[in-house]
Image (cartoon, rainbow, N blue to C red; front, side):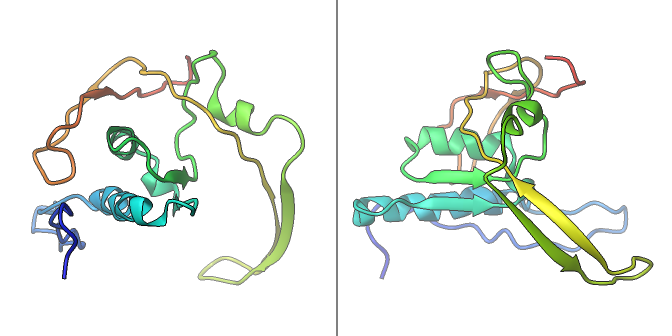
Length: 163
């Protein structure tokens, strides 16, 4: 039984490519937005719990950021950065985030794969909370769907390396 007010969910599974190499149907990026919406739906029932939506770098997309803001950000979200975005202060995300000492370090053995030898890897972790400026360039216009029917347009910035 569904709780009142919950939106219908769209099946956004991967569709096969057509003969011309294009995929039809909903974009896979909708999965990240739907995942956040599911976490956000739980927030009122779990008021004493900090909810965090964790995603990989495929979720570094403006529609997810816009949807979280539209919902009033009832849950935190964490995505590994894919884009070296410009920050409001004029800095770049990468340099700002890796400033200072890392939060932690890890060493592990990377297993062998086709044409790649096994090798030890060292990784460091930094984290910073940042606010992204509205930016310049192409505007994001949400498609009519259960995910973004009333979303405000948000500006998307494609960086050529300069802020």
